[in-house]
Image: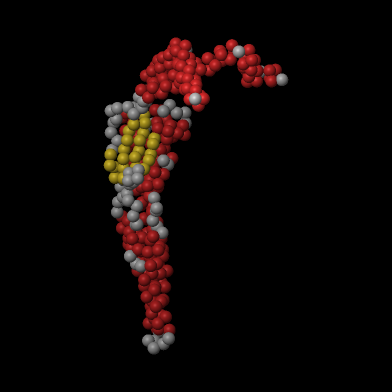
Length: 321
């Protein structure tokens, strides 16, 4: 029986506590509703005054990072060549294109091309670059597709800026590709002359070595080695010339940015809903704090404790002494 009475008493306490909470809310309902409605009206006015933001979006597939023609040739020539060619690969080529898109070189050209310093009302070119960087979102998906998104109040400018990123990236890729091919051609060209001289010397030594002598095998091995080295360099040189002459790989545009018809920001309904929820919660919390304060003041002992607490929390230096 005592256990049953304890259980009933506990349930009664819970019910009384819940009723007390509801009574507090009902007592301060005007304050809670007033604060919530006022916050809702303010948030609606704020959200309506926010400018519409449009997002220009373009998606591109960069050139697949494969071995250059020279390194591809190396990989076909066996052990040594394969080891050399394999070291030329890049683990994640998309990181290179992301870095190019985010580079100051590309962004500065876009700022000057669209006179963004004036459009963003920026005092300096650096401020305009920071504004463009803040308005831009460049990412790459698991499928390797690079997405460029640019926000702006002007939908036409938003789409134009997104497309400009890809156009400037294409120019940069072409410049780097031609420069790299030219450097490889010059390198192999300078290496071919000493290789040719060593091959000539090896051929002379081989011709002068009798077939029956012990040095004949060494001379033949050295001649074949020099021939293989010169053949590799010659083919690499020709491949570099072809790479320099042909067009560099272009960026494949999957989805070109078009003028957005609908705004992407702000989410006015979300702003209002979150404001109402947060303000309503704060109003309820304030009602409970106020009710607890009133009850504490009604009890002399609790009132004295509250007075001491207020004194300790005060920033007044004299109160702390």
